[in-house]
Amino acid sequence: MSSTNKTENISLNSWIGTDIPSRLDFNYDNETIDTVITEHKNDTISHITEDERDTWNNYMYTGVYSGNGSASRTVETSCPFDIRFAVVFANNRPLSIITSSDGAKHNYSGFASQTSNSSGISLSSDYRSLTVTQSSAAVLENEYVNLNEVGTSYCYILFR
Image (cartoon, rainbow, N blue to C red; front, side, top):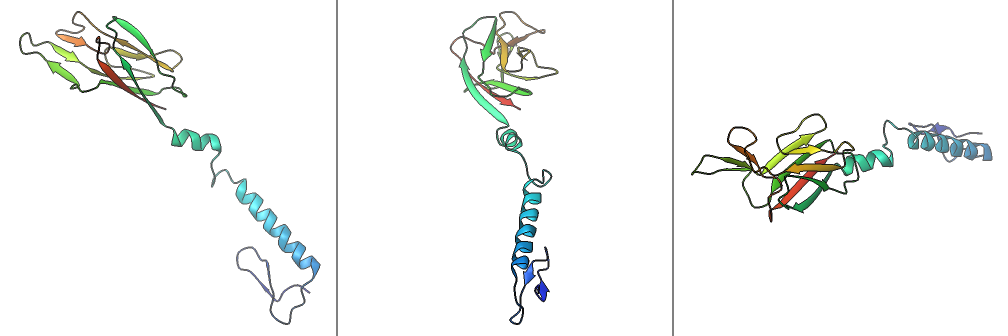
């Protein structure tokens, strides 16, 4: 005889004092529990995969490089994912400086994405490294790009 009562959610046996449990009752409960747990575990709507968890938890990568003064330079980032968006800025410098003597604007920051970028920075075709520039002549009117100035330390933040 199965139990007089059943649990509310998955109908497991819930015996009262006068019920006589049988092996079939226990087997039914075990099969029900196994089925419910397996369905829950395999539910990809309620649960995420390890790859999804890794993607969500590791959405950015940071690093630094020191400017070497060359007009153009590739910065190998060792980033473990394809870069979708990058921000580069000089450490301990404002984003840009306007000199009072000639009104020249020196930009020490830049942004790049897979579709567009600001002056002086771009993503590589494999989306794993950056190309930065250092201009000795104005790139636009009186603006200069300073993303590889000799001795200047730069930080990059890369987003998945």
